[in-house]
Image 1 (cartoon, rainbow, N blue to C red):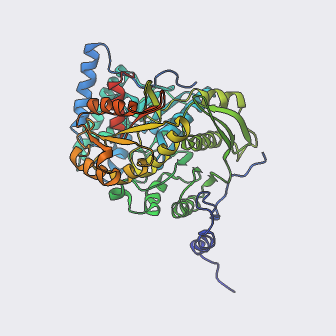
Image 2: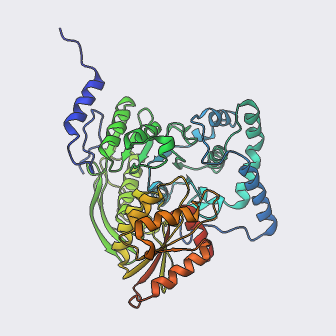
Image 3: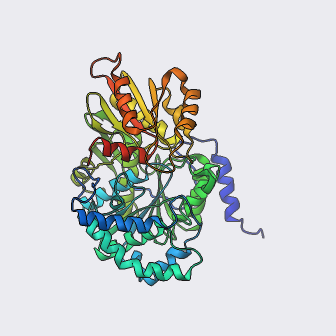
Length: 499
C-alpha cells in the first residue's frame, strides 16, 4: 500500500503546472477552498487641519512631541512582543470588534477608505487605521468615516499612557511610535465602540504592530518591490512577510499578483485553511469607462454583478482597488460562502460615489491644473502615469518630485519620464527626504540636463513648475503633477491651502 502524498508536494506540483499561465490573473489552483457563487461614508475634505484653538493645538503638539521621542516608523524590530504585552494590559481592546486587515505594496489606504465607505453605507459604525498621514497625525485614526478629533486623540493617548510606560519598563526596548499609535487606534475603536475595524498594516504583515488582531477578512493589494531592505528582495519574499496577516479560517481577498507572490499567499492560505477569492477569478472588473470626475464601473463581486457604479477617483488602479474593496465587504457579510446574493445595489453605488482618497491623483488647483499623487515607488509611479494620461490628457505636464532617501528614486523617475516634459527636483519637509543634489543627479541621467530644474524649496519648485507648464502649452492643456512621497503631497497640500 502506497503512503499518502505530502500536501506540500501536491502544492508544488500545482505551482509547476501553473507557472506559465497569465501572471496578471494569478490563476494558480492551490488546493484551498475558493469562493464561487452563482450569481455612511466620509464627505468633504477628509484631511483635517491643525486645531484652531491655540490651547488645543498646543496640547496636540505636546503629544506629538512625546511620540516623536520613540523609535520612528523606519526603525523596526521584527516582533509583536511589545504590542502584544500592551494589548494584554489594556484588556485586549482589539478583540472587541470584528476587523478587516489590509496588506500589500500599493493601494492599501485607498482600498481601506472604500471598505470603510461601504461598511458605513450599510449602517455599521466603523473605525479605520491607516498610515502614514498626509497632513495631520489625527488622520490615522478615523471613526464613522471622519478623522478622530484632536480632543479625542489627546484623551486616548493620556488614557493609555500609564500602560505604555508600564510596558516600556518591562521590555528591552520602549514601544515605538507606530506601536503606541496602533494601541491608541485599537483602544479608541473599543471605546467608541465600533461595529467593524478596517486596519492597514504599517509594513509587511507577520511582525507588523497591527498584527495582533484576528481579522475574519484578510485583504492583499498588489505586491511589488518596496522596503526590500526589510521585507526581502523578491516579490515572493515580500509576500511571505505580508501573508502573516492570514489567520486560521479567514477569508483572503487577493488582488492581481505576480505569480511568485500568489504562490506564497495561496500556500499560506492552505496552511491556515483559509478561503480565497482572487481578482480575475472569483471577482473583478467587468467594464470601466472614463467619466467626468472619475470613472463608471461594472464590478463582478462574489455574489454577482454591480453595474453603473460611479467612482470619483481617477486611474485604472483605483477601479481595481474598488473591486477588491467590494469583495472584502461581501466576504465580511458572508456573501459567497453563507449567502449567494449581492449587496443592495443602490447602497453600493451611494457608498462608492462618496469615496475620497486625498493625495491620490487629487486636483488641488486649476489654470493650470495641479494634481497631487503620493506615488513613492516604481510600481505606484507607473500606475499614476497611466492614470494621469488617461484622465487628463495634458498637452504639457511638468513634474515636481521629492522622494524619501530609502526609495528607488531612479525607478520612480524612469516611470514618469515618458509623460513629463520637464521635472523640477526639490525636497519635502521630512528629514528622510532625498538630498536635492543627489536626486537631481539621478534625474539628469534619466531626463537629460535640459529637462531638469532644481529648486531646493518646495514652494519655489511648485511655482517654477507652473511657469514651465504654461510655456508654449495649448490654452487649458497644461498641468503639474506633484509626487514622489506622501510627505511631498502633504506639504504641497498645505501650501495650496487644501484643508
